[in-house]
Every structure is written in C-alpha cells, then in structure tokens.
Image (cartoon, rainbow, N blue to C red; front, side):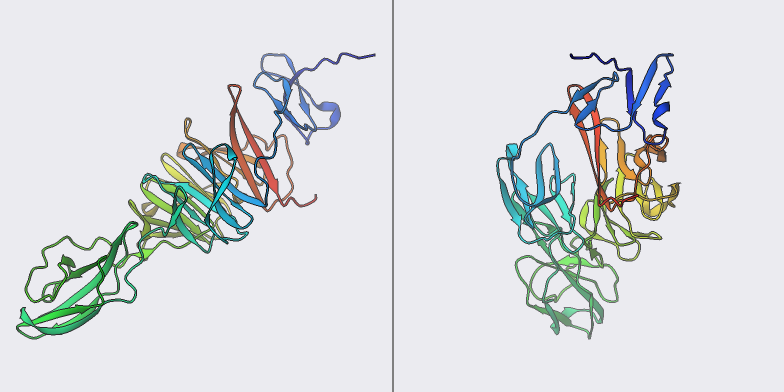
Length: 383
C-alpha cells in the first residue's frame, strides 16, 4: 500500500548536524528541514523538491574546458580546441592539439574571445584563430648609414608591424651616430612594417615613411607600443576596465588599455605570494585567489590587494551574474559569493564540510524562472 509522506520546507543540504537535529525553525516560525543527501533533484525557492530535468548525449568525446556566452561556445574535445556549433550538433576544430591543460576563455569588448592554456595564448573569431597581437618584425629590418641632409647627431630607430591583430610591440631601438648631411637606409621592410625614428639626439620616436630617412620628416604619430611586451600565456584570464588580465604562475599581468595583447614589462604586473588559481573581476575591482583571497579595488596597478578570505579557490570554478554584478567561485568551505566593494560571503560554511579538491566547475543556471548555482568539485580527496 502506498504511504503518503509529508515534507517540511526543504532549506538545503547539511552534513554538519546530527541526523536527529535536521529540523530547524525558520524566521516565520514555520518548520524547515535539512537534507543529508540529495541526488538528481532541484530544490526550489519555495522549499519544494522536484526531479532534475534529464539530458542526453549531444557530442561524444573527451571534453574539458567547455565555455560559452550568448555569442558562441568553445571547448577542448579530444585534445583540440573546438567551436561548439549551434545546438551542440557538431564541433569545428579551431586550434589543433592544445592538449589536456585547462583552457581559460574571456570575451573582450573588441568582440573576440581570448584564450590561454598556460603555454599558448591567442584570440578566436568564430572558427578563425589568430595571435593575441601581431608579432613584431622578425627578422628585424637592418639600418645603415648613408648620405643625405640630416643634421649631425645620434639617431634612434625602431620598428613595429601592423596587421589584422593590431600593432605589434616595437623592436629594440637601434642607435646610429651620423655626421652632418647624413642619412639612414633600411632593408628588410615589408608592407606591414612601420618605421619610427627620432630627430638628432632626440628621445621621441615618430613614424616616418618607407624609404631612406634623409631629411627631418619624422612628424608622424609617436610610437604607442614602444618597448611594450607581448602578453604571456597563463592559467587564467579575464577582462577588466579595458584591459586583459592574465594570471601566470604567481603573477597577474595587466595589458595596456585596449591593447589586449601587450603590457608594460616595467610595471604592468602584480606579484602574489603563491600561484594564482582564479581571477574574477567585478564592476569596481578584481578578486584574485592565490594563497588567500584578495580584493584589488579600482585600478589594479595603483592600489594594494586587500585580504578578504584566509584561503584561496579551486581553479576553474568561477561564474558571474552580469545582472547583479555578483561573482561565484568555490573555496575551501564551499561556494564563495563576491560582490562589488570586496564584500564576500561563504553561505555553505555553516552547513557543509568539504574535502580537498584539485579544481572545480560552476554554472549559473536560469530555469523555470529560478536561478540555481550548480557546482562540481573535481579530484576530490577522501576524508
């Protein structure tokens, strides 16, 4: 005979309380109950439970690092970085043989998706992969002295390349001393090469036209990428206030504003005490997790990190709600909620005990008018 079972309002999971103390009194004086285990169900906002919606296999293979937004989706399938086509009916190889290392993705204001796996970095436009920035001229064009109409003095020259990925970093400047009525001749130029030169004993590099530099016509634009460096690959990347952020080891690199593939090697980075696991921007600052969780307010290069939690985070475990400007990730004690201003909460700390894990994954799901945060901890150690 079927027996009817009445449930109190479900308030969530709890593995800290004894099984005999799972019932709690709610603020409205009604009774609620914790669950010790929940398998294959959703808990609604009203405290009811319902069976999780089913799923079926769309694309087989060995997958990792699946990422997507409203404009496209990518992942690594069988060792290749692929674009996941509409409806997940098929995938297209974009970058072959990227391997098993986790890949981090971020879409930037230029519309491109930037990616890195710690050893490679690039950008994606649909099924087209390109470098994060145009490579500097290699080999570097050769500068030689010639006759002309330049005044005597020390002249400096550098080169960049301008391509579909913007302007490259400059080459190392070359210095040549010229006598009166001297000039400079260039060889090894290509159509993409830009030439920048100073005047006699000058320090400002201005663009000059192709051809010999034999008169003072260096009145073009100054070199905006002078002595910048290519952004390094890293284990995590994100976008914040017009800059690409890349975590490589224990350093956070910040690109030049709107030059996402370039950074200033003299000051465009922040060292942390340990390897960085996640980088998660909010509207007024950036959360960075390493040995601890740090909040870096405002301009990262002109402020000091503030410790907001005494522990770090699981790599790969970030999610972000654009509507509420709320960040989510997984820490030592479960889900961490990060809001603007460096305000963090750990809502699962009082109810759940977690074992150590190697990495995590977090999904913000909107279904049936409710938002749910779905988390997975990978490589969990037995406790």
